[in-house]
Length: 81
Image (cartoon, rainbow, N blue to C red):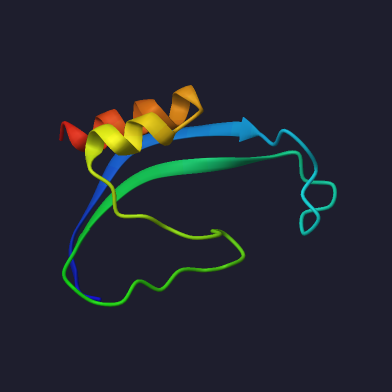
């Protein structure tokens, strides 16, 4: 998949896991940095240790399925950039 553009939003945050994850014993949360990437056509390849899957959604459908305030805030920043 061709990467056309990467944008760094200079937004960082952290969150706590609701429960201990089996593959992350002793880890109680995670930090993040917000980036957006514009890609061309092609197959999506992702790290199965970091993600369980993906979906291509329009903005309003994506906003509906997000459950955490920081996720919604990040999506709004990316959408309006």
